[in-house]
Structure formats: C-alpha cells, structure tokens
Length: 67
Image 1 (cartoon, rainbow, N blue to C red):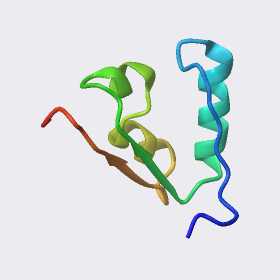
Image 2 (tube, rainbow, N blue to C red):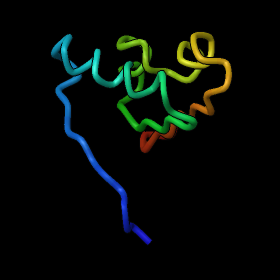
Image 3 (spheres, rainbow, N blue to C red):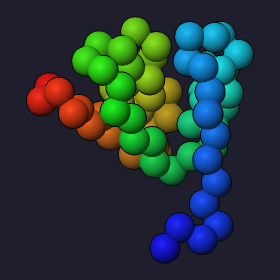
Image 4 (cartoon, rainbow, N blue to C red):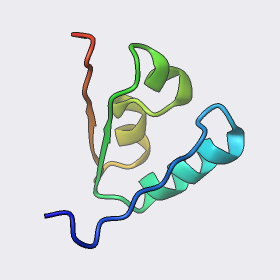
C-alpha cells in the first residue's frame, strides 16, 4: 500500500540538493540507493559512509549493474 508515502526529487549535483538528502538521512531509519557504480561513494551516500556517520541507520546499496 502506498498510502501516506511522500516523494521528493533533488539534484544531487547541486550542493543544496545533496544537503537536503543528508538532512533527511540524519532522521531516517533506512536509506536505499541505486545510483550507478561509484556514484554513491563520490557523493558520500554509500552505505559504509552513511553508517559510519549514523550508526543506527540501515543503509543498502542496490545495483542494477551487477556490482
């Protein structure tokens, strides 16, 4: 059921957009991303980086490219 879910589009190449994502992650329980290989790490949004900053966060990197 998708009732009550919200969505947001941000430009991760814009520092303001990246700041919005980081602010949301700080208050999140789970973060799932499917960026291209290496992109999440370049942006600091990979599971290892996020979990180091937010130990309670469950972060998952899902790759459609077989990484």
